[in-house]
Length: 221
Image 1: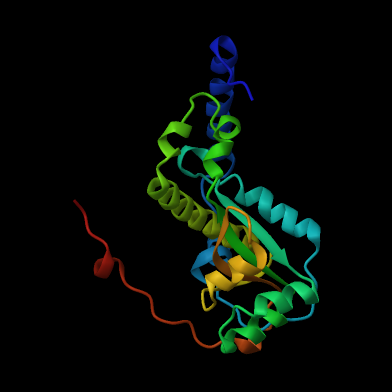
Image 2: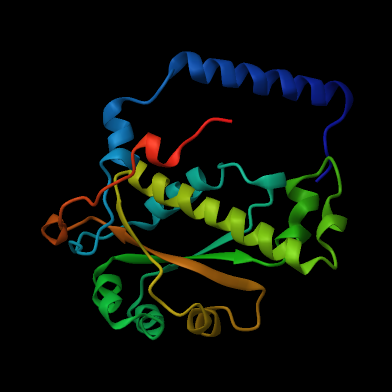
């Protein structure tokens, strides 16, 4: 992909700036109900109804997620949607026993992974300057960037799923090694965390756990 230059670049910049102004003019902020849906009153779910999640909705969630910001537009996250009985059985091998039922009952479980070769895509993702030399022969920087930004994309993914009406239940009680051996052997992908998706059975909920106050964990400098 060739990066725009000159008048073409200036036109695109002006258009982007105006689009941002227009967006904030139309939507100064989300409603309290919208904020409650995606974060304030949202819950992590452990029980699910049998209502299916259509593939079109997974495409929509991805389309929202991929537009979230990452450093240098690296976009290292990769997503595997585990839906089939065979896929579920393979994934179950990695789970702690108490998490098996949570995963098996969900219509879809997303493996949130990241690609250690993400930086090779930078000529497409960041075309106006070649940043590949920052990553080449620098495995620690590659690993830090992939994990940090892949995790950030995982959070975007969860918010996007809630925004389109799904419930989510993220899980870390599993063996990354087993997932990587089972799903990513011979590739440059590494698993980060799992996220169950579907329509919740609220009878599995308990009361929301405490959260810190602003004064407890925030400060000014």
